[in-house]
Image (tube, rainbow, N blue to C red):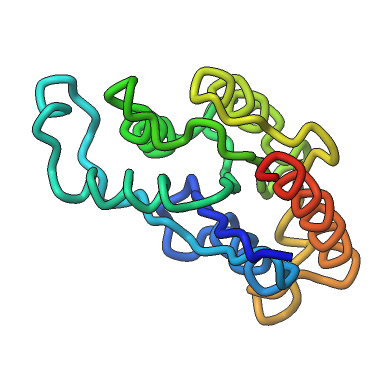
Length: 184
């Protein structure tokens, strides 16, 4: 089985972000057939059509990393029942100009992470809606709404507990099948 490169997009910029911790757990737990790597969005200037035909180097580098990936995994918090602005900005940059959509056709999945009970339901659904216009075929099941994350981390504050680790592994196993199915 070929190894597939997965661009992991973390929607939070916070240094101690729960989302980054979960993204790193996905990386640690990934099956050998999936090579997960976080593609940073923190330094992307705001999207503007005024500069899209002569984009800054950081935009070009970002689009190149997305284009080189075989699949996309979004790991995001929810802000005000939707997605963080930095994530929306990254989506726009990757999709523009329209004939150079770096996301196009890459299988995707989303996990949302929150200290609250509902685990980022609004953000999860918003990412799925945006993925339609980005032409990212999204894995439908299992869904990943990881709520009450503080209770799911071990004392080190980084590693997830056994039950959550099993959930992440099961999610990755389904994602692996989805990626292999779409990228045949």
